[in-house]
Image 1 (cartoon, rainbow, N blue to C red):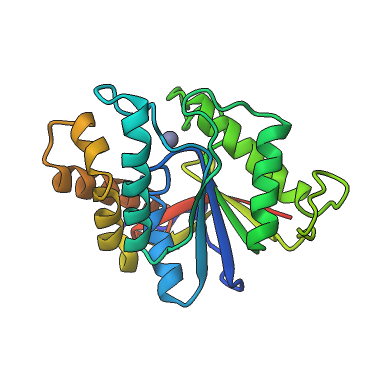
Image 2 (cartoon, rainbow, N blue to C red; image 1 turned 60 degrees about the horizontal axis):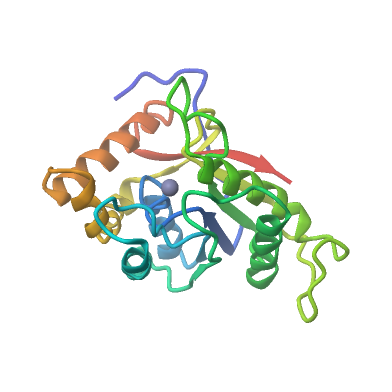
Length: 244
Ligand SMILES: [Zn+2]
C-alpha cells in the first residue's frame, strides 16, 4: 500500500452512458485502457471504438496488404473481450496519419454518429512523459480528437447531410498521458484487459520473444500498479481529463 500523497488522481466521472474511443492503431486501447472499458461495459455503459488506421505498417515481417486485415480481425476480437461490439476504421494510412481537416472531419462525423458524452483518446503530447518520444500518428489522432469534440457540435463545420451536430461531449479523456489527472479502478477489468491485449497475438509475437500471456500480464499489471501509486494504492487506469 502506497502512502497517499497530495497529488492523487481523482476518480473519473461516472454520470454518463455512452463513450467513444478514438485512437490511431489496433492495440492502442489494449495497452492500458481496456481494463477501464471492461469495467464500464460491465456497468451497462456503451463503448464504441474508432481507429484511424488498420495498423498495417505495424509488423515488420508482414506486408501491409496482409497485415491490415489480420490486425483488423485481432482488433475486433480484442474489443469483444471487453464488451465492445462496434469497431470502425477510418482508413487513414498507418504511420503517416496527418493532422488536419480531413482527420478532424472523419472524427467529428464519427462523434456525430455515436453521440458520446465521454470521448477517449491516446496521448496527443510529444512524449509519454520525460524524454520517451511519442509517435506522430498518436499525436495527430489525439489532437484531432480533442479538436473534433468541438467540431462535432458546430453545424457549419464539416456539414454532412443527414447527420445532426452533437454538442454533448462533456469530457475528452486522454490515456497514456504523462500528466494524468483522473483514474479508474483497474481491478475488476484487469484480467479481461490481459486477454484483450492477448488477442493482438500476431503483433505481440512479432514484437517480443516473451511468452505472449506473460508479456501482456506483466506489462498491464505494471502499468496499473504505476498509476495506482497515485490512486490510493489500487491498480488503476489513468487519464488526463479535459472537460468541455
Ligand atoms: Zn499506436
